[in-house]
Length: 156
Image (cartoon, rainbow, N blue to C red; front, side):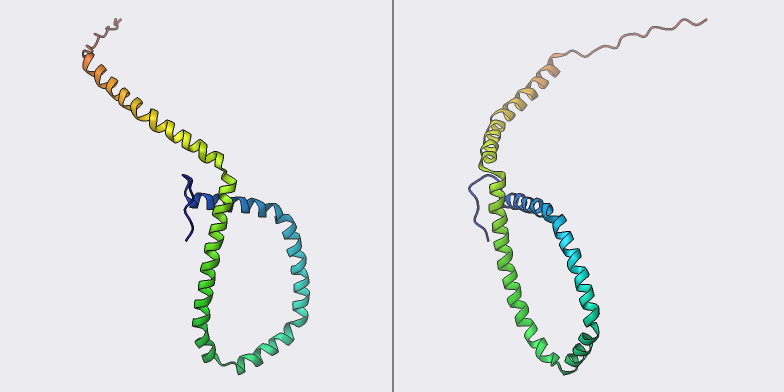
């Protein structure tokens, strides 16, 4: 898998930050990509319409001479090797995302988080205990309040 970083943030957080950075980068390229794809699609459609008849005849000939049993035999071994390749690529991509996320987040954030966490640990617990003690003390010291008598409205 991936190496654990020496920071307090887990690797998935860095991977998410890296993926977000890549997404922003790719979204900035989107208008140019859309123009390019629309031009290529129009050209491909013209070419496809011209060659559709001849390709259909070629494919019919291939289908009648293909040994499907041999294809089934090879499919399992090829699928296994592709799965291994995909797993290796996924691990490499995840590691790259973690590294990119660490650069995006930066070490200054980690240092600030350490300081904030240390401050929280030092101050939060004693304040909560003191507040609870004061509530208990004031509840014990206050006498019960007696209700005040109501004034009656004069009737006419």
